[in-house]
Amino acid sequence: MKIGDKVRFLNAIGGGIVKRFQGKDVVLVEEEDGFETPVLIRECIVVDSSDLQVKSSSKSTMQTVEIQAVEVQKPKEELRKIIELPGGDKLNIYIVFLPVDIKNLGKCNYEAYLINDSNYFLYLNYMNRENNAWNSRFRDFIEPNTRLFIEEFSKEDLNALEHICVQFLAYKKDKPFALKNPQSVEIRLDGVRFYKLHSFKENDFFEDDAMVYPVVVNDVPVKEILVSAADIQEAMNQKARIDRPNRQPVAERKSESKNIVEVDLHINQLLDTTAGMSNTDMMNVQLEKFRETMEQNKSKKGQKIVFIHGRGEGVLRNAILQELKTKYKNCPCQDASFKEYGFGATMVTIK
Image (cartoon, rainbow, N blue to C red):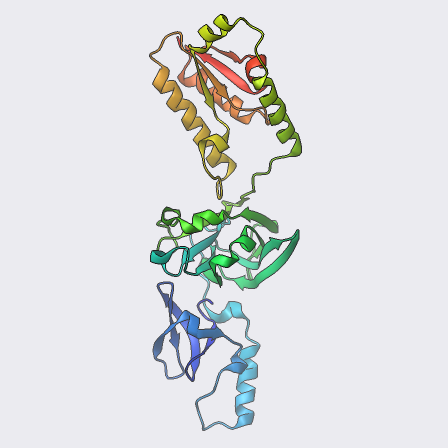
C-alpha cells in the first residue's frame, strides 16, 4: 500500500484514496466528502476503482460505470506528482523488517517493507527459496523515494524466508535517465536475529526500531558471501598441516611460540554473522582488528605477530601490506612459516 492507492474498508462501508501514513500501523484515507479518516492499515484493502462504492445517488448506474471506466484507465504513476531528490540518481534499495510488537519478540508477527531510496521507478519481484525452487511472494511497481509494504509473516515462516531474492527493473517516466541494469539480488536472513532485541535498531526509514538489509547501495548490489568447494578443501588441508606434529625439537618450538602472537583475521572468527554486510564492511572489520593488535604491541620490541588472512584473491593481504608501509614503516614483515600456518599468513616483527 502506498500514497495514491485506492482502498476499501474491510470492517465498514466506504473507502477512498490513501493520502499519507501515521507511523507504521495507521493510514489517512480521503473519502468522497473530502475528509481524511484514520484507519488501521490491516483494515484496508487496495482495490481497483471499479470496486469502490459510489455514495452519490443522483447518478444513474450507467453514469457510474462510465466514470469508473475512466478512472481504471488512469495509470498508477499519475496518482501523485513525482519529486526527485538530490543524490537520488544512484539506486539505494533496502528490505526492512519490523516486529508488530517489539515487547513480545519471538511470539509476534513481523512486517516486511521495501524501501526505494532513489529517483527511479521500480518493477519489483520479491521471492523466497524452498527445496531449490523459488516462490514469488510479492510483485508490484514502486514509485521513487517510497516505502512499500510487502507482507506480514509469523515466526513459523522464518525457516522458509532464510533465502530471499529481490529482482527489479529501474526506469524513469517520460524523461531521459541513466541506464540501470536489471538486478537479481539474493540475501540470506539469519532467523536468530529476529529473536534478539538489539537486532532492531534506529534507522532512517521508520520511527520504530527496525532490521535493515541493504539490497543495492549506490548502484552496487549486495552479494551473498559464497564459499566454494575449493576454498573448503584448502581450509581442510591447511588445518591438517597445522595439526601435523612439528619435527623441530620441542624446546625450540616452545621458545619460539612464547614470542609469537597469532591473530586469525578470517571474518567468521571476528563476527557471529555477516548478514547484510558488504565485502568492504567486512574488510574494514578485519583491518580494524589488525590495527588494534599493532597498537597493543607497538611498544614490545622484538615481538612477532602472525596475521592469518588466508589466500583468497590476496585483497586483505595487500591491504595489510599497505598499512605496514604507511603507518608502521619500521616493522618488517614476511610470509609466515608454511609448515606452521600453510598459505595465507604474514608475520610482522615489532622494532
